[in-house]
Image 1 (tube, rainbow, N blue to C red):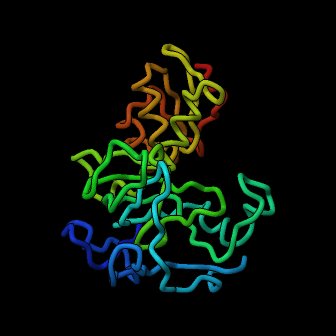
Image 2: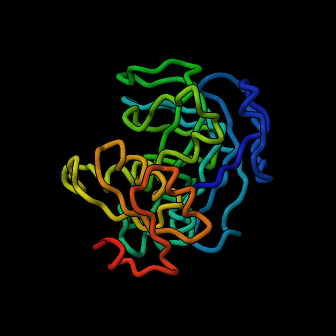
Length: 251
């Protein structure tokens, strides 16, 4: 499941609460619009974590159809370390290379700072979640600000805190597309689905999406998570360490 880190200071008091000790990123924005600096974790070559460094960088300007987000919490995903190490580039995933220097990070929760032209539906101060463009050029969420396509921005439900919301975007999107995307999933009500790793970030979203979509759900997890996965709505929870999965789903 995504972890999150936070900035130290923010106009919204909720964002100022640190969930982890990775609170290097206190908001220290100086100047006026067009002349702002932000702090970001930048890397200029592939390698181990020590290739990343804290740097003062210009705040990106939202382009046509984009939104500038003031990041409150950023989610941490396995894809972030793969991007930094070069594993993603070597595998040819989405982009074959990054334009250095680069800021990684897929998930974020924060507030709208400003919008570019043709970026309708949001205004300054809106609480939102977002995920990065993942194009190898547009910087990600390990920074005080990030610009993203407006199609990648959604309002945060009132029931979620910023910390909770930052763990949602990539895991939830992955789960939903795997089940219901017309070309990747396309499942229909009444069909059966087996979800592995149902207690994890993607799996826990998948169980809930599947049930809300009218599917019959069998789900695997360890013994310690059986009650949790059942509470998510799974029709049949399988302890993969003690049960034969094939036999369980045939029963």
